Image (cartoon, rainbow, N blue to C red):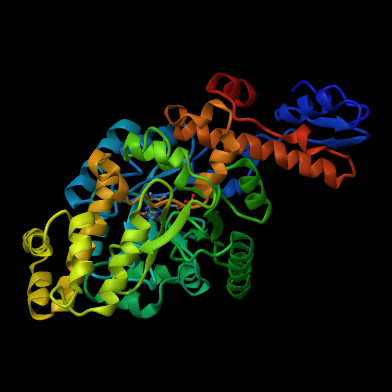
Length: 508
Ligand SMILES: Cc1cc2nc3c(=O)[nH]c(=O)nc-3n(C[C@H](O)[C@H](O)[C@H](O)COP(=O)(O)O)c2cc1C
């Protein structure tokens, strides 16, 4: 390691201070203060990197319908990130094909798959867990859980054994995404005895596994998700993360012998300052989402990526969710360049106020048939019916008994197609695109403005991640220098996005 030359007076020698700060592989010495070398590999919890075998404490989250595609996972894994495939919304066959493809292309390189809670279809959730167990998938991102289910507990407890050092070894790892303390607590604790017994009695785990399950937390990593793209409670990370870290510490104090679970963070992180601040708040790792959808490897369309590149931080809105429409659950979507949020809100308003297709006011019905469905609601119902007859006929029976359920299914069909149009880039449906997206997207665009990364074609998952991490490392050192009493003007620590070759020079 060649030490950087000492910078004598930071205010007079701004360029030298900046050069020293950007050279993260060497210490900075200035005005008698010294901050050691600190590359992106040093950010976050070393245990996270060790246990998962990754270079960086940086994860790319699952994105439904294969938006977190196999290409995205491959790019992330090769760069040393922890990347999750977006299995939600895909058939079991497609998920299995992704498992196979990634096993072939990545071998032992760490990567994971989404195990999403399906309240309306517990059989699907169990089948997905079963598939992961059968195919030897060792890492899942568990999301949308409000409570533990037999499927996720079975996955976690299968294969538990006592290691020679007396600790319990868990071959199946769970990274659980949560946005509330009640749910976090369930994953930070071991699975409850009642569920462990139930699974053992049903022969789904062994008696030994049920017993050892009392000694491991349900998840070894819990991702606290703040205001993010897609499903979100819109909570601010600066309040949510410390409170869940506190909760983890309190639970750990109750059972000091147990391995503590790590707490990471997601939601709003897409620029260096956000990542640096998140690590400083105690996150073991950061997870990104929105910004990865804007990268060329994602499973969405070029048209969507172009729209995402134009978003500002305020260009998102909450809109009714297709999967939990009747319950009034909302998702965060892109507002600029598409009318989806407004149109979906209109459908929800009509659903709340009326009990059947026939009861809709004539003018409103004409309007949505013309602008959104582009066919009569009767024709739309016939297609929806045909879809559910192959997928879940009980829905059709219920809709035929309950006209309000039929109304919900037709409206949900529009919402579901709106995502597919966005992913396919259907040119005649641009105003209907449903694009899950959080304010992180706008923050990234602001940071990338004027640089090569403003261009959608240049955005690559690993390049974006390593730029965010590099910038975070620079800012962390600037922060440390300031804490030592050195004046560091903001311009000395500003990091512009670097192209691949320059980044490699700075980091590798
Ligand atoms: C397009 C899109 C689809 C998503 N789908 C899922 C999903 O299926 N399962 C999941 O656990 N999280 C999903 N998420 C959340 C991300 O994995 C990640 O936690 C989140 O996007 C991080 O916040 P950010 O959007 O502010 O970066 C999705 C996010 C986006 C933007």
